[in-house]
Structure formats: C-alpha cells, structure tokens
Length: 228
Image (cartoon, rainbow, N blue to C red; front, top):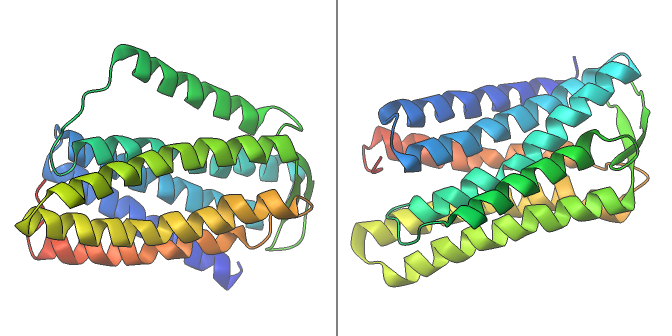
C-alpha cells in the first residue's frame, strides 16, 4: 500500500476516534451529535479516497468513488447544524427547511451514483487511481458544498461577534481550526476538480488538513475546556 494511502487511513481512524469521543461525552446533546457526525463523514470521506486509490478493479473503484463523494458532500450538513447549536442555539429550523435539507441530500446522492453525472470514467493506476469528471456534476457539488459551508461560517462568525470571554475564545479557535480543513479541503476536493475535469487532481491532500482540527479538539478536550 502506498504511504499516502496509509496516511489517509490513519487520519480516518483519528477522526472516527475523535467523533466517538465527542459523541460519548453527551449522547443526547445536539452539539455533540452534529459535530461528531461531521467528523465521522470526514473519516469516511478520507477512507473512501484511500480505498479508491488502492482499488484493483474498476467496479470496486467505482463503489469507493460513491463512498468518498457522497460522504464528502454530507460533511457540510452536520457542520451547518452544529453552527446553529454551538455554543448556544439562537435559531430553530422550520419543517420546510428540514425538508429542503433532505431534498438536497437526495439530489446529491443521485448526482454521485448515477452513471456519467459526476464520474465519466475511471483510470486504474496502481496505488494512485484517477477519474475524469462531468462538469455539471462537479459544479452542482460545489454549489451544494459551499452553500452549506458559507451558511455555517456565517453563523459562527456572527456568534463570535456577539460573544465575549470564554465563549468567544471557543468560537475563535474552533472557527480557525475548522476553517483550515474547510478552505483547503474545499480547494483540493471541490474547486480544483471543477477546473481540471480530466483528472481529479491532488484531491487526496484535502483530508490531511483535518489534522489541525483533530489536534485542537484533542487538546481542548484534555483541558476539559470544551462545553459539551
């Protein structure tokens, strides 16, 4: 197995472990549930990338593209919900808004799995498989991804502006650490493939930028300074 892919599997394990740790601190808390779900989808996205790159047949590789792309598209939804709940909830989603979120999940699922809507063809290259992309499929993914991402950071930054003391400190460091993976993960996983099309490009770089968030949360939890 290629060292890059081994590293991806290791990062996936870190995110799963941290997701379980945060969720286990309070099973019923909406903050814990939404954030641990986001980390879990980061882990599945990362694992999907590693396994796709290592796949030996086109059919297996195709399944792993479904796993990585669908889980990658889901990351932003629990993160958006987390931005509503953390560190306090100041907005309640209406039923029609939940319905729209569900519809967006169904649509992105179809974009991922329907033939030629996202993935046009797969090229098997030992330990570094690649694929070419349909412009309209990856364009929709970018719209979906950045729509939820912008809303999430808008909520966090607004709360940061209105907060003081320890709450403001939590929001500052969490926004910066999650912003790193959002910025670079989005660039490598969404924006560059949109530009290149003939290749997915260095999309595998994106998950490595989750490490600052993992380190920050691990430190914060060890200091017992995170309110869950």
